[in-house]
Image 1 (cartoon, protein in one colour):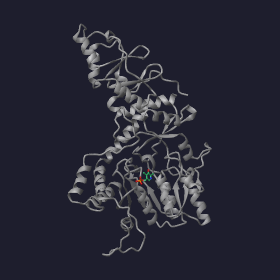
Image 2 (cartoon, helix red, strand yellow):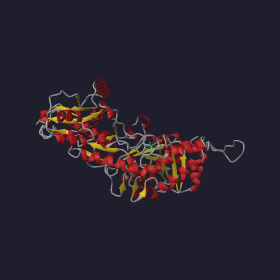
Image 3 (cartoon, rainbow, N blue to C red):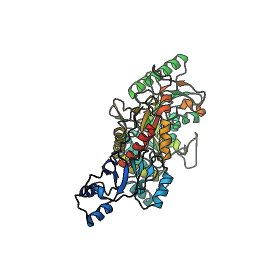
Image 4 (cartoon, protein in one colour):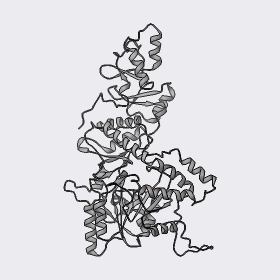
Amino acid sequence: MNAPKPFAVSSAIAPLIVTGAMTLREALQRLDETAGGPLMLVDSGGRLQRMITDGDVRRLILGRHQQSDGLGVLPASKPVTAGMTTSLAELGALFESTHVTAIPRLDDAGVPRVLERRDHAGPVLLSTPHLGDLEQEFVQQAFDTNWIAPLGPQVEGFERELADYSENGHVAALSSGTAALHLGLILLGVKDGDRVYCPSFTFAASANPIRYERAIPVFIDSERKTWNMSPAALERALSRDKARGTLPAAVVIANLYGQSADMDPLMALCDAYGVPVLEDAAESLGATYKGRKSGSFGALSAFSFNGNKIITTSGGGALCGDDEDMIARARFLSTQAREAAAHYEHHVVGFNYRMSNILAGIGRGQLTVLDERVARRREIFGLYRDALQGVEGIEWMPEAEGCFSTRWLTAAKFDRECGLDNRRILSGLQSVGIEARPLWKPMHRQPVFEGFEFEPHTDAKANLSVSDDLFESGLCLPSGSNMDDETVLRVCEQIRFWAEG
Ligand SMILES: *Cc1c(COP(=O)(O)O)cnc(C)c1O
């Protein structure tokens, strides 16, 4: 158990906390350095006495006080405060009914722990779109040239630029990551009744397209090192299925929360058994594995540009690979499989899966800021790790050797044996308007996939599978690249509070 830390304050508010010993001159300086504070005057027990604005100090100096006088000369003034559990709605009402610009949240001892600012007090979301400067320009180009319909120069530009960035020979820009995975399975020859391996620990969109083709998913557990597909479980499943003559038609490997799976052993196994890999890189654009871009390992790879991903086209995806014919086929299938003929001639069933020229314009702008977004997501992870260093029992998602993670979402396990309860933290965060999420619920536990096989990563120390353990104990935290440091630290203080519960 963690001992409560009654005087712990986040580094976001530490410079704002002052005692009566500070002089008026120092206070003015501090207000200046902290861009107007306001400062929080506390007693020797760290308990809040009053708020101090620039105006409060200047009025004293204009009166009969010296700059060298201590803040103790300030008259008492009851501060407007909230509790650690005051909801956003209540906080909003408090801001409305008072004229203050900032309200401290006090713990039960009366110590300020979080400072809520009027212009910041909105909800904190998990991961929101973050546009750069060029998107509008590319979209405007599409309007100017009247290329509003699907297809056009922005789609071609986006495909070329994404191919370069992701170290793929060819790219088909599509309407979603799910569409990319679906076409990927079709192109790898997956048919009705085939078995397809898929991670259990992933988003349902990795597995759903297997069912679109009426193939049979076989769920493979994760390993602890990367949280992604376990090479040990994959090997066991492949060798058993080879003996039974039921090898899968394809293996879907997902790279979660911004980190590549351990591709060397996974690809070696799939190659040895002659099974093609479809890489689900929806969450790992910008990551690398042993210096090579995530999403360039599978025979085919899928990216997503959904609104919550590291870059977005509001909705979109891409199928990538080095085989030009396969990607050309993906473009053909994604535009209703129209044969080359003036009339509408169709020999196979097609799809309406192409990305529009407008959205590709947004994608081109987003690609130019991708590396900045990666850097900021990693910075946000660093802020969480550093600010929560003292809380025993938090196990951050490891960055495995050879992996460069984008930290698309900061993810962690919370150890019950240290008294941490991920569900209590989750509901606590929710109660103050901070969106966190449990880690992916394993596919082998989803009612929609009931009855399909699951291959666990056997692990002597656990009676739970790795994916079950991650789901039972983990959370992902707000990680949008447009979050400022102060907001991250506000979230940290709330995590500390609910962790100590
Ligand atoms: C987001 C996501 C997808 C699906 O992408 P969409 O563009 O939303 O269809 C697939 N797999 C994983 C792992 C994802 O996170």
